[in-house]
Figure 1 (cartoon, rainbow, N blue to C red):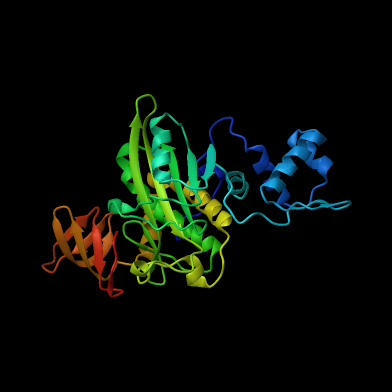
Figure 2: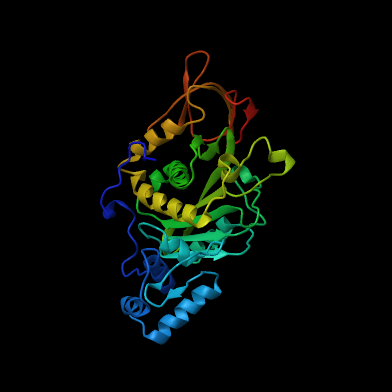
Length: 347
């Protein structure tokens, strides 16, 4: 599916990798193998390795679960990859790798906590931290997030400033659109967005975004974009069954999580530079996918409640709610209830 008003152009329109960045060796091998069969000697030349070095690299990939049969005349072939997230595999499947580092943990309390720690310790980024399971995953307002092992994508991306800090409040909107476009690239579903940054499929929530910021003394401010996406779950706890679903439940098919992870990082790298110039295109994509616009809503904020019709998004991505007396309220955050689907949805 298209980008709803945003057109992919030259590579410089993406976030660029840091100077001197080079794909890790295993990511390079996997990237080349996905382009077709290779004769080992030719692959070794491309990699700048001797035969022994290439053999060791390939054996390491096989030990990780990659099936790499060797045909005597056709060369080496990537037959299958393991059903788990691997950092180098994610990098190898990105169209435009821009992250300095991609790491995957088998289990952690929270990927956002890990990314925040890295930022406070002076990590330059950009980097992405995935976990196959979280024991204390959280969403907005500190709510717990159900993170079933190897069923979803739980990732936090640390980035440093390249746009004025005054525009960082747009980051959640950008990430929401990136997530929607990534899912639509990989899975045959239509993704809608419930303001400010939840992803919905078929009237139920499949993903959410949490943006947190920090600062270290030497490098200054940074942001952590946390994303939780339900991918291959087949059921949810009873208290979530009417509110949440997974992509597998929505389309009836198992989903390649590595392809989805790579697609999200690609889309994010394309859209983050549009937090400044080009943000109107992001807003257009959000409007086209909005769950709320045109419907009656009730918004709970720190200063009370607002009830009316969700009319539009303003130039900063804030929700414009028309009150019964005709006044238009500008809402920057809150917990939303809507009558559109006959149930309560939390932002």
